[in-house]
Amino acid sequence: MNSKITLLLILALLSVSTSPIIGRALVGVNAVSISFWRMFIAAIILWLFSLIKPQGKMKVSININRTICAGILLGIHFALFFEAIKITKIANATFLGTLAPFFTLIIELYILKRYYSSKILFGLFLTLIGSIIILGYQFNIESQYTIGNLYAVLCSICIAIALMIGEQVRQKEDTIVYTRLLYLSASFTLFIISILVNETLFSFNRNEFLGLFFLGLVPTILGHNSIYYSLKYVPPTIVAAFPLGEPIIATFFAFFIFSEYISLNIFIGGCITGIGLVLISIYKKQ
Image (cartoon, rainbow, N blue to C red; front, side, top):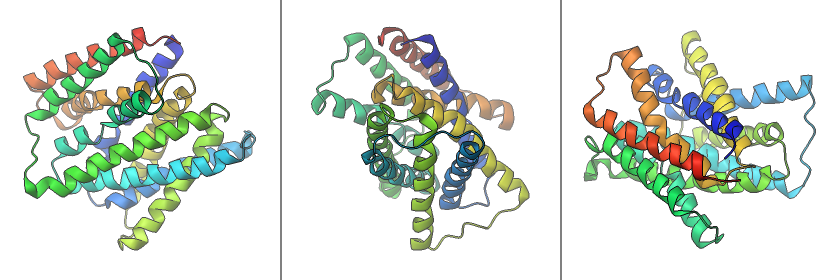
């Protein structure tokens, strides 16, 4: 994997890791509203950028439908993830919500018949073990958390399928052309969800709007766009593995912002996950 893609995926990891910190600060905004405005603001920014600097249009007509499908899945992913955070432990939601690389790996190995070296598989294994060590001390699968845990697993499946679709589309389409429609489709999906679950999208103040704008700009445009750019050059399983480092970065952010204690298991698990990501970066050849 070349250094440019590695740096972009590290940027994506750092960017998306700010999401739970901002999400915690937006205590007065419901999950669907957070998800909707995150996607809608990102879509508006990209469409406005396209007006200033034309990006062209989709080169292959079927990719429009594929992108809309991926956007629907992305919207459902965010709705399920933020709802999971509300009804289960954050550790449960974070861990189960970042299992996408293992679902994409299953698809790639058994459906697409792609080959991965043992070193890559070992790197993936280490990222999972590291995440379990980081989050396992407070992980709970008691019946009271069952629905939230299920939501988190489903959100991982949704983003895994969206990444597989994104890989197909990105072979022919530019990143901005793809993501501007992707985010718009996701925001429309979340708008429909808000109607179905009777959640308001406009109950927030000026400071909360600034937080929502930050979510649209940093973790979405900087973070997710870096991910979708990389999909043209790196298989979805490798791309999806990098967000497994999110709990590490988010924990350090929380330490400096909220003075949260960094325990030994977080330090050890973070080192193991970091080693796994380094192995993936070094041995994934293009």
